[in-house]
Length: 134
Image (spheres, rainbow, N blue to C red):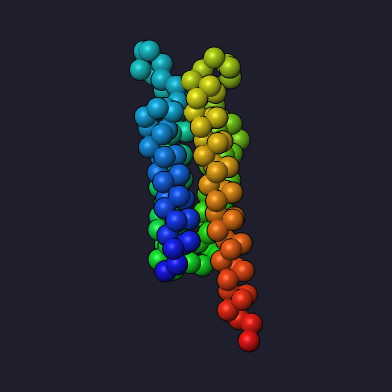
C-alpha cells in the first residue's frame, strides 16, 4: 500500500462521510412545521447512502488500489452532485432550505469527490502502465 493511496483514500472517505453526515445535520433538507414531509424528503436518504457507498469504495481502493474502485467513486461523486434537482425533486421555492443549503453542499462535495477519484484513478493507471513496461 503506497502512501499516495492512503492519502487519496482518506480524502475520498472523509468527503463521502461528510456528504453522508452533512445531509443529516448541517445541510438537512426542508422540514415543514406541521411535521408533514416535503417534496425533497427522500433527498437526505439518497445522499446518505451515496456518501456511505463512496466511503466504502474509498476504503476498498486504499486496501487494493484498482481503477475500478476509483471509477466507482467518481460515478458516486457525479450522482451525488446531480441528485438534488435532477435525480430527486426538490422544492420549487428558492427560499427553501433544500435549494439554499442542501443542493450547493451536495454539488460541492460531489464535484470534489469526482475530481479526487479521477485524479487518483489517473495516477493509478500511470503506475500500472509503468509496471507493465519491461
